[in-house]
Image (cartoon, rainbow, N blue to C red; front, side, top):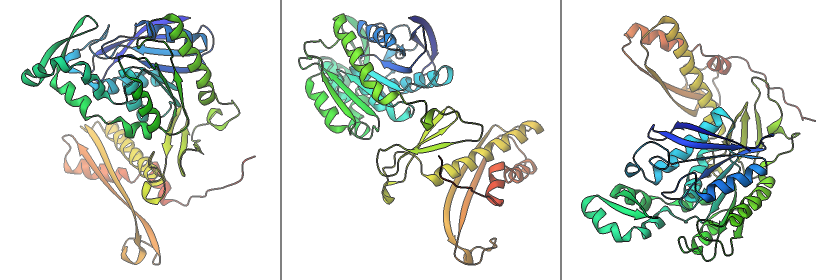
Length: 406
């Protein structure tokens, strides 16, 4: 096993301390591990599960949330929302430097955090929770003795597992305002719930709530006599073994399947996910996205719609073209923002249209240019917007050649 220390910026821009454990041979998939409340990446459970997963061919990134362990920042200024944001930062680091995580694992409150963050990590295909609360507000039950002081002074020092932590009222407000049921119900990833029936820290009812809220595919595994922290080595290794075998079903894809075929420049693969009526998985290079229809037309709204992607392509191309031109001219353009809207209008109501019958597509494109530009420069950049390649494609004759692939 190869293990290395790494750092990356967290949600508050503080350096987060992390450890990436990898097998000596090929990596089957990357996993992201979120630790328990006030814990660190180096807890026995985190280290042992990572070690066992590496033996199964996984690379595992475990990190300290802001203000904990070796990470920078002040724990007193963090909350559940910032933990979720840290997770997204960790996934982004993996995506940029190695490969986006296919598997998300969360222990205790970290389990709630991965449920909340999963929608923001489209590449993840499977999620595992270990002794997780169904709602972040569960943590408040362990802070009841300090609540009067927190409410009165806005902050109080609380001892957790023999260590002192400053808990602010904003932390309580944040966890009590979180509602995970919707996130769990809309997960759209395979889920496995590990929980010990005798867990005295997070009761087994939490596992029941998570399991009932989630849609299939989902699994529940009883941890029998294990404690909440998985203190016994055999418990942690057993969880990792079951998790690795279970994840095989959802993460490993035959190399002949479309998502793993090599894509040339300008190629995109779109395929049904099998989840819901219209949900699609979109792959462009190493990027994976989702597409769907809104609920108003029978979809589940799990991703942008086809016209949303059309507008996104035009908007991105417009912004990039303006940026390139401004840089070439060395004009003081600070930021470009493009807002687009698509609608169908009657041709007879369109003075600019050549078509005189039926309905035509109309796109409103509002361009905001920030920076000390004069009017002549703004007018020229508006002209340049019409020269973006996607804009030209929409106005040019376009042939779509369709055939049944063998």
